[in-house]
Length: 315
Length: 114
Image (cartoon, rainbow over all chains, first blue to last red; front, side):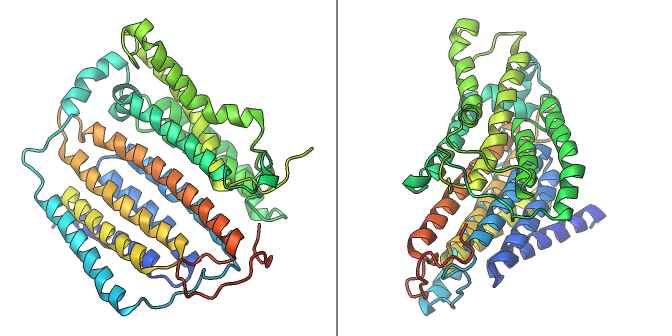
């Protein structure tokens, strides 16, 4: 067994142990903290699978932003009935649930072990088209060029999620601002984090967007990091969540999918096909779309975390 | 056993763990956590399909990887919507447990309300 294999095995055990902790922990907060650690460990697994783009997304969104969402919600739910009630399950559940879980896991494990040889792959096709897009990162090429329609629709899903969250607001708060993310008085440590991390984080976000064309990175990761920076500033109460009725907010939310769709619709005129990019000019167009996607993601994620409006709109 | 097979088995185990938590735990926020475990397990299984598809000079097949990236973002959006539903449930009933026998508190007792 080489050192790398030992590390892999250790990592696998650690991931499973932390995942078990998030299920078994008695307190909600402990479980949430476990989940954040789990996401970070998982991104190391993604690195081991040669998937740095996925690792970045998992660390930023799967672990980071989801963690903020769960911690904030845990704090908001404090005092509600049933949060910490952890009664042992009934007799039938106690045997059926583990049985079902083991059955499903075993079936999946069998699939993993019996995957077809030789493996199916679309990598040669991805390689073939890469030169025409002018990109160096095949994952970005798949997202914005080969499967652009999917990615556009996924942006629409994000907008729909925001609409869904906002529509849960009581009528009297409609158009107002969501509840603040942090406590009233900013703490010294948080202010220090603002000063030290936020300027750097904004730079890292823009850098990830720019290099995403050729290196690991891209619109999702960049947008998530910029979103995190905005959330840090909101948590330390240096700025408040905006009113959901604000025009700039609405425009920023739909800018990504709207620009994406507009370029797609212009495709038949420019290059002879829906979502086709003109040859030799694909990379600037892709970066143009991605810039608006970064904006929309950076605005969407914090608004999803902030939740529905909780304050009356100003008269 | 290769690193990717090991990761696939971890993914399978994560789906099992998440499914167990989803069924057994009556607290909705814990159910969301468990559901996210199932999701990341499924992503991992997908990830080894990408790794096995290494060809044409890439150490991975970029198509499944791109789909996993989309999936992670959509999973977050779904979690956020579910969380908003829980907060609304708490506002309406003062209780967030899906266990029908859990002790209920009167709504709007102020503690922790935001």
